[in-house]
Length: 180
Image 1 (cartoon, rainbow, N blue to C red):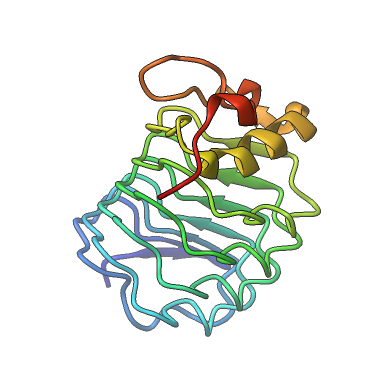
Image 2: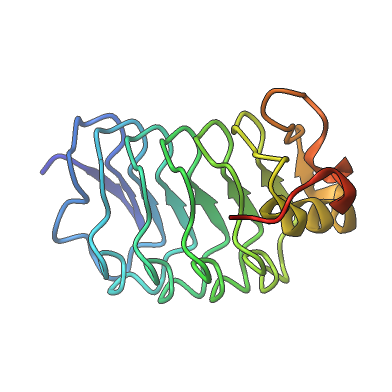
């Protein structure tokens, strides 16, 4: 067994894993998969883990997330996706996470966030979005800028536009062009 278990915590961090290991107990409350070599998540990979409250996926090689990958994790309070290579997130990927309090998305390759992506995060208190190449020339950014302006107290650090260092929450419609 590559991972260490203590109570309902499973720690698979720093084990050079290429994928999420099989056989994680369904009772697991905290699952740490940080600092591995995980390049992709299979659809449904977390569907048996409905008791998860903490999921740590930071510091891997994820380039995309499958649609619905977190849909069964309705108890989740903390989700770490920072320090990956995500260029986008699927529409609705966070929609079932009504209990999520903390979301880490910093230091990746995100250019924009789909409209409505954070609208169901009713319990969110902290979000980290800095160190991404946010594309503020395209009007796709307006959802995120508006959301950040409305939820200013939740942003930790600051998301800034690629190339200009303008805070994303300061971007206005007048400074953008419609997406192609």
